[in-house]
Amino acid sequence: MQVIDWRAEAVRRGVDLTRLPRHIAMIMDGNGRWARARGLHRLVGHANGHNTVRRMVLGCAELGIEALSLYTFSTENWRRPHEEVEGLMRLLERSAREELPVMMRNGVQIRFSGRIDELPPELQSILRRAEQMTAHNRRIILHLAINYGGRAELVDAMRAIAREVQVGRLEPDAIDENTIQAFLYQPDLPDPDLLIRTAGEQRTSNFLLWQTAYTELYITPVLWPDFTMEHLIEAILDYQGRQRKFGGILEPVGSG
Image 1 (spheres, one colour):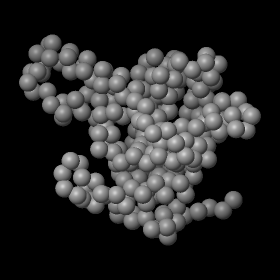
Image 2 (cartoon, one colour; image 1 turned 30 degrees about the horizontal axis):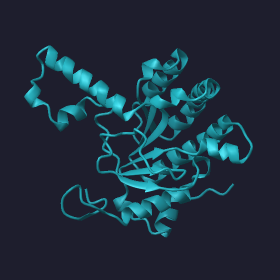
Image 3 (cartoon, one colour; image 1 turned 90 degrees about the vertical axis):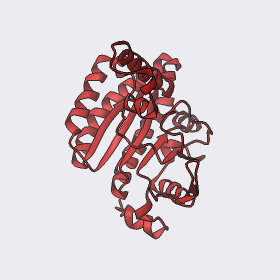
């Protein structure tokens, strides 16, 4: 199997490595459709999607992306058939165990966001162990949203702020955007510069609602199991061709 230098390949295709997005978020859609098109069970699609996750994490690390956020399991996904949910939980457990040595070797710091305490106990234990073991890795942050919803995150933040007000540690008039940011699941992560959604759906599906206020969106019809580094480079090139205003004057992307 040929080993590709993705930094060199990105430059060859026109990517400016000095203006990369610091933080890329991805909505990994299309696993079920990929499986259905091949006459396979949906869980086979999810298992193949896992291969894409590894490809993206290691590829982003090689390019020099600081953080990668992946929408892994939403608070709404519990509505899926019981068999599929149970299979997804088992897949998450197995993937966490198998991938931890790979993440350690490649300097990946793993973080989790969501209502983790509602997950199966064994999965909770595995996720916390992964966070602890990789806490000092610095090459790239892999942020996995599991049992996550953007609205749920804001509800949890508001509840925490209300408790601070209730005990007298915070004045209501002192609450501002920085206060809310401080009570989010991962307050120190920079907001995503680029959000990629596969499989062609044109919505954010309750993912990082607060953080994506000014994020550039990139929609591709490619199903998640088929998403490659070539597709990622295309998305980055598209991002670098845009102008980001943040409500103000035009500035080239990646200018800070």
